[in-house]
Image (cartoon, rainbow, N blue to C red; front, side):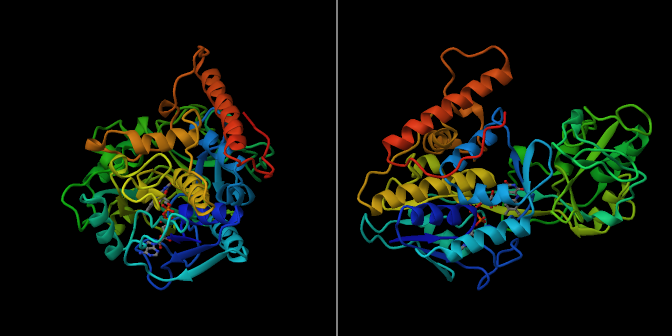
Length: 461
Ligand SMILES: Cc1cc2nc3c(=O)[nH]c(=O)nc-3n(C[C@H](O)[C@H](O)[C@H](O)COP(=O)(O)OP(=O)(O)OC[C@H]3O[C@@H](n4cnc5c(N)ncnc54)[C@H](O)[C@@H]3O)c2cc1C
């Protein structure tokens, strides 16, 4: 029997993996008994912000990570594949259907019992065959956070992410925007937009120099919301609020989320000076999110400043951007590469709390913690995946990075050992690294007795 605390992406995946190996699981989730500041439903694996699982090609490290997870019969990736919405080379999902799929699969599994309860303390040490996984995420409740802080022997580290606004599709002024993907990279079989003849996964709001200047001035003069409960704001560099980026220089946004490269405005026949991209956020296509536009501006200020974006002058905002807490442990000081804690091998941490960053990485750590906790329950040794795989590289980083200045990370090819004979071209090098990873994963699966009958989707590179 395994106890898992937290029914998010990591906890749900861990429960699925352990139960798939025949080990009974109790999954404790506090919603809806106790809500978080951000989750809006009682569903398991609710996506709290973007609906994107990022790149889906093998030349992309997170694409490789997802493919490895597919091959290990990941519930999260299976649900994502089944509920995907058009997003060019990325895997984006209908968030409602995605969470419903995961929730139903967990509910229907005969070996998983879900209890809706807030857990206040780390699970007690029982025996090595009764391990526990704590996967309570970036918004771990206060009392459990305090107990974790006492256990890891160090202060929790906090930093803050900010999330992007969403607008109602029918309120976007379609005479001002055009549909296209950068460099014309559309999803295969994309429908042609009625009326315009345009194809592409994104709606693009083009800006002239004057429009950009007006927007920039309003943005840098706007008032931010107060963030309670911290002394020093530390943002994850990959998820900076737009106003923080803007404060770094007039053109920083034009080299970031507002970069116009790869796009031609049909109105002028040239690339715009800057662009704001809108990505479909649900399958119905009635919600669009502003790509890379996470912000901590006050909602009234967002309402004023974002309306300066061409096409959004009269937009209805379904959700404004906001700032949130992120709680994580100093992983290299606490964890082995198997996601077990060094002090108590029967206790695992997984998900964002364990010091990874992102939906896919959180689910990936849950997958490995679930497999290894099940191994313990079955009297077998837990095993880390090879470092040459994305799963293994992530675990290696988390357990071996510098604990004096630990930063959670997304998966990246840079975390994997270099190839002995690396091709010169970057795309070829990445593909060769991915091929090595998948070959090593297959060997590891056999050695670890984890060869899965799961049908893997074909590789698209
Ligand atoms: C506002 C916000 C925006 C984010 N935006 C993105 C994004 O756009 N893209 C991205 O990749 N990542 C984003 N993240 C990070 C994101 O949270 C993680 O990538 C992912 O959700 C982490 O999965 P998890 O399973 O670790 O945590 P969660 O998915 O948060 O799951 C943890 C679960 O534990 C439950 N829980 C907490 N405390 C207790 C307790 N004491 N007892 C029982 N249950 C408990 C919670 O209710 C929750 O259901 C964002 C995070 C936040 C907070």
